[in-house]
Amino acid sequence: MSKKIKRVLAIETSCDDTSVSVVEADGRVLSLLSADQDLVHKPFGGIVPEIASRNHTMTLLPLLQKTLEQANLGWSDIDGIVVTARPGLIGSLLVGVITAKTLSLSFDKLLLGVNHLEGHLLAPFLKDDEYAPPENFGYPYVALAVSGGHTQFYLVKGVGQYEVIGRTLDDAAGEAFDKFAKLLGLGFPGGVQVDKLAQQGDASAYQFPRALIHEDTLNTSFSGLKTAAHNQLKKMAPEEIEERKADLCASYQQAIVDALMAKLKKAVKKHKMRRAILTGGVSANSGLRQAAQAWASKAGVELVVPPIRYCTVNAAMIGRAGVLRMNQGERSDQTLSPQARSLESDFISGRSR
Ligand code: KG4
Image 1 (cartoon, rainbow, N blue to C red):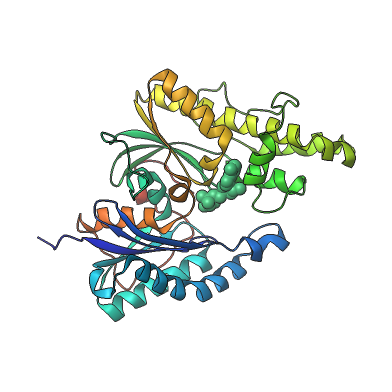
Image 2: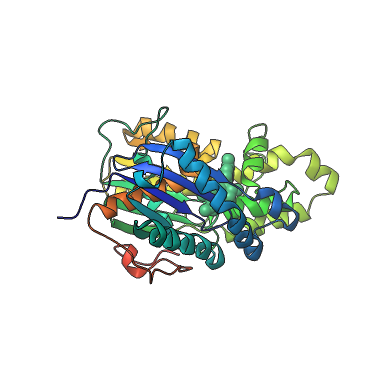
């Protein structure tokens, strides 16, 4: 039998955040450091892939060093290296994968490439001095993974047992937030700005569409919402838009929250689940958190929304997924290469972008 892996160093560079973490086999996060590139991409109103990968090359090694120092550990304390190998921006993933392979060779450490989405699905089980999952929380559960690049519903039945039960047919919810923020000139990334303004606005001021909410499917669609918002703003004078910004944000956010909540409720009911999680950057949204928590307590569903540091892009969740898989005997070798998309075999059914 292979040796039990006690502790891994994890690297995440799938998009524009560089993140490194040291995670123990039981999910305890010993250190987690991340560097975003928001200021670098801000002038372009979105992520520029070439700039993202170039920044990872400059940030990753110093961050690795600091993460080990923060955990008060050296290379001899690390049993394996886990890296996000897919899905994501290929140039960004490449920086993480090549670094992980080099470290694995140089320090003679085990290596494993994992799927970024698997990290999100297992994030509730991370723990630190301020957060621990509810005591009896376990599989199976419904997961809504909602970020700038993904909006998917899963049935999580165990490690490696992820069934895709619904997905966006077009834009991700985070993308819908970011595009609306861009239309309003709120800056990048815009989700958090829309959220802030929405808290001061009237969510019933404008009517935006909630696509597919009455359909039997667990799929979502946000492209019509974006077009409706664009048309609404075209009808308004710049001064009126400025004056009604908070109402516009509140109404737009409510449309996204309603669309996601309709499918979350449907997913839990259809699959007869009593547990659910929210994960991904958009799960930081105050409207979504409140709506999900209110529904869960009324419906008697055990809902876990991990702290924001474990919901947004972070290497701790990658370490968690990797250490579990390594302890099941999984390994990558030096042929590990990044992939822009998930592999068919990463999920039980369907494909996950
Ligand atoms: O998971 P994440 O950090 O990165 C990936 O996309 O993988 O998610 C980022 C997304 C962005 O679209 C951002 O605007 C959105 O999450 N976001 C929010 C909030 N905070 C972050 N959207 C709505 N409300 C928020 N409070």
